[in-house]
Image 1: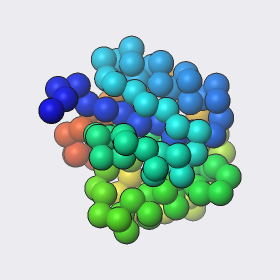
Image 2: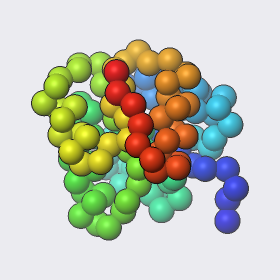
Image 3: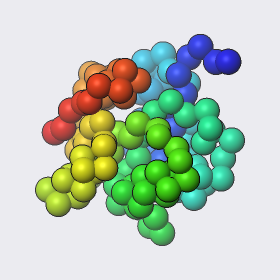
Length: 128
């Protein structure tokens, strides 16, 4: 069993994905990054992930849709949603599905750290 929590990042934007993964690693976590929801769903990390950071708007499957697929398959992974296009309706959908946090890009390391800690404690989180 792994002592360090695994944080998976799903973001179709390469620079955001790489930057977020680097930030997560700098916070002391194991980070795995995926360019699409489908690649995460087909990965070995699916069962190892302690917290998921997902972009909201992605081609083929949005972050909200990814959450719904995970839930339908019985996975209860805490999710932090991030977006470059804040929308109150999407924010409401995300929190209605149990999102830990909903962060607007760009976000700072301190805010992400608080969200990850909340996700790992499963006690709710934050919103921009």
